[in-house]
Image 1 (cartoon, rainbow, N blue to C red):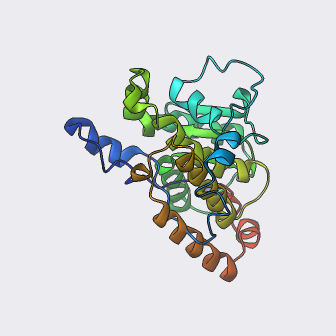
Image 2 (tube, rainbow, N blue to C red):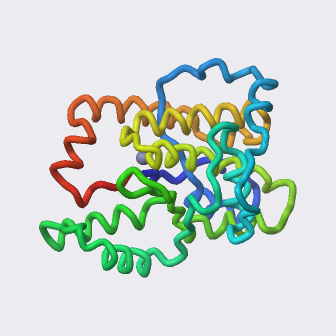
Amino acid sequence: MRRSTANLFTALVVVATVRLVAQLLPQERSASRPAEGLIGKTRQASTAMEKPKQDEPCSRLDPLFRSALEHLPVGEPVTCNQVEVVEEIDVFLREYLLQHAEISFPSADKRNEWEGFVKESYAFTFNLRFPIYINGAKYKTERELFKTGLAKWHWLGPALAPALAHELVHAKGDPLESVAHTAELKLALALIAARKLPSEHFDVGALRIAIEEAKARETIEPPHARSAKQPWKRLE
Ligand SMILES: [Zn+2]
């Protein structure tokens, strides 16, 4: 689950959009692992950023989301059909819960809490499986800016890619936030080193802190235990 919004856009000058962008863009809070050799190794990072092969042209996806997919690391491509953009989160949740009768909530409050959590998420997966859902409305401004094709917004695709790397960890079966945040950080650092993501637009320090916080939480209560106790929370 990736909820954070980013303060990734501090350097923008466009007045009207800046505030929106700052609210909407993915922000990552985390921390801890060293940069794993990526910082400063621009050449390696560039190699890692080569466009992954896609099963299909992904024409059904917004250019922003296509760009984000193209910036996932080589070796971990995500195909179009593994991503679903949710345009109307309320409608989506209603239909999803109708189709998944096995999901039950102990009370209306718990259901509301869960739904609120999903609605605030920028990207999410359910039950550690594909697809990766992108909460499309959360990226409204970024989608519009990216569609302009202006070079000054090209970094928005790479800025979203780390969020997908995070969800990819969950979709492949790992529930640990610390692991997902670490994958996110690793990709962000590689993109920054490759000069595809301006460092002022990604809060690496906050992401490092989030990793440490997640590790602390996971020590107290492993996610698997929590999921077993509270099946309605099985959303990562
Ligand atoms: Zn997560």
